[in-house]
Every structure is written in C-alpha cells, then in structure tokens.
Image 1: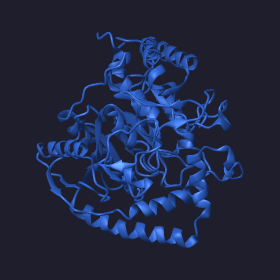
Image 2: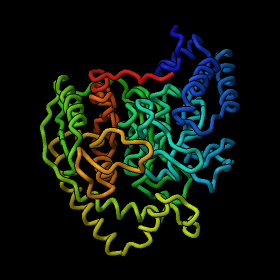
Image 3: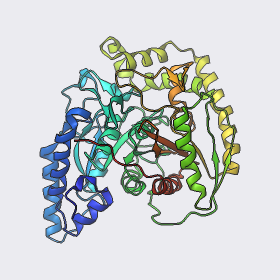
Image 4: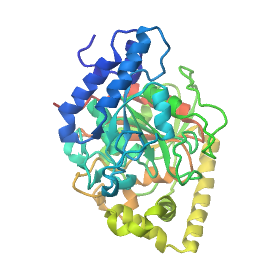
Length: 464
C-alpha cells in the first residue's frame, strides 16, 4: 500500500474503502494532512470542515463494518466551491458581505454528494460571487498556481483546480459561466467539464431558467470526472431544463471511427506558440486511435461581443438582490452588474442575433464532425497579482474577453465542453485542450479526454 493515499484517484479510494484496505477516516486524515502541508502557500481551501467530515467518514466506516451498502463516492474527500451552499459549513461567496454566512440548507449538488457518501472536506476559493478569471477576493486573498506560486490558478473555480493538482482532494465541484471550470483546469493541469445546461441541476436559486451558468465536476482523471458527474447529474423537478431520465456513465463502451474538427484559433485572437504546440500534439494523439481529424477554419470571434452583453444581462438577473449594494461589492462584480444595467434592449437583441448567426455556423460543423477540439485558452497562466492578462502571444488584447474567448464562445451555445491537460510548455506550465460536442455528449467528451490523458501524461507539480 502506498504511503501517499492523497495521490490516489477517487475511483481507487472507493475500491480500497469498500474492501476495507483503507478506512474512510484514514483517507480523510491523509488529505487533511495534505491541506495542512500545502494550503498555507496555495490558498485553495478557505474553510476546512474537519469536524463534519470526520463525522461523515466515521459513519461510512461503521456501515461498512456492519456489511451495509455504501454509495458510489464512499469516503472520497471532495472540495466544494465557496458559492455552493453547504448546511452548517461557512459559505462566503468570496464576499465580505457574507464572510460569516453559514447556510441552513444544502444545495442540490451537495445533497447528492452526501447521499453518495462523498465527504465534504472543505470549501474552495473563488472570486467574489465567482466573477473573474483570477481567483482572488477580499475575504481570503488569492489562490496561487501550484506549478508556480507567482502565477494565477485561473478562475473562477481556481480553488478547486489548485486543490486537485496539489492533492488536497481527488474530485471537486464547481461552476462555469464563461469558462470557470475550464480555465482553472487548463492553468492547473486537471480536467474540468462544463455540462449541457440542465444536466446538473443546482439550487434552488433565483434563476432556474438560466442556461449560461452551469455547475459541473473537476478531477484529475476522466474516470473520476465520470464518477462525480453521474452523482451530480440526476433529474430534479425544481430545474426546468433537467432531463427526465437519469444520466448513466457508459463505462468502458468503445468509440470508433470518429471525425474530429481541430480549430486552432476559434476566436481569431492568436495563440501563444507553446500552447499551440501542446494542443496540436494532444489532438494528434487522438488520431493514433484510428479517429480522423481535419483542420477547420471557423471564426466565431463575434461571440466575444455577444457574450459581453448577455453576461451583463445575466449579472443583473442573478444579482438583482444586490442592486442597492453595488458600492459594497468588489470592482469586478459591481462593474459587471453596472454594465448590464446600462445596456439598451437593442444591444441585447443584437447580441442574440449574433449568437444565432454563429450557432448556425457551428451546426454546419457538427453535421460533419462528432467533436471539436480547440486550445482551451490562448495563453499560459498569468501573474497572480494581475486581474487579467494584457497580451496574447506578445500582442495587446483588443478586449478583456479575448484571453478566454475559446471558452466563453461555447458557453453561448449550451454545448458541453471539457478541458483536458495537453502537456507542459517549455516553461513547465500546463496547457489545456478543449473538447466540445453536441448537447448531452458528455460521455463522448470524457472518452476522448481519456485517450488524450493516457498519451499525454504530465507529472504532478513539486510541492512540500
């Protein structure tokens, strides 16, 4: 038995706990020790729920000793993003307004994790109300990238990504509006899946009809990603877009003779040379399994403008209850809400028109291809003390949205998208390959990610 269970996958942990090779308490303690050893520098976990987690772990061990059934996440420590309500565990939303807030009810996602016997080890850092691509807030400060602590872990699920690659937990839950699962996955060298809207219900909240912001899983492997997704993705009456049938992991079902479209620069913004090389190599690895890949030129750059407007409207819808407190909010969140308030109805109509035009361009691609591959991001991680980067491959950005254009564009269309590590740059930093498919093609995306991860393997970062 390895002396480092914190390096184990969630799948392996469940196997060992069910066979009683390891206890849930032992697994929890080794991950708590890992948090103690690394979190002071990384700042991925902002609230450690040791007492409640230990109670969960002891209950799981007791049931196993009695021969009782346990759930599919039995004893697996999981990090939950600090915008997701956890009963009895502080949930701050990264905001000074809620610095001491303790919910009395779990989010649907947390309910399902607990029902599956997952152990909530703590809450992971996020920008204020998950607004921003660099995980920083005035309550807890910045989350640092484990590959280079002078750099950003990305956002807004930066605590989840950094905690995963540091070994603080093997799986994490997060959310994604314009790339908040995929950005930190790319920067930290893990996997993040933005599911089809409705597949993973959350809340209850004030925007049940929302299709831009979705919850989803993060993990270090596609197998663990699938494990957590199956727990999270169950129908719920409170969510109007929730499918009627339960999502089932297809397991080892083979995929054959796929046609893949590789789009090197989907937003015509340029791509850092080292990122482009990593992503090209990872994409080519898929063809080694007999799948066909074509280079395609598809320019969806107008999606940046549409997303900017629609995100502004989304911010007003989501945070209507904070409209009278804008001066108490951080700059990123307040400016996004103000943009939504200042927009004209015609701007929203124009944004929807752009989205429709681009959608039909994308439909033509999916009529010919099973999946689309792009670099997740056009840049490597940027300095942690910057709010966002200023250049792409040495060229000054035209707008804030340029640097995460490849992720935000696919958010517009409600398509599932996954970031998988595509290697390390010459500077030893992770790059991410984005895999996009038609609605409800999550299983296909995870199969392709599995192919990439087996052929493009990266080491863990060196930490204490």
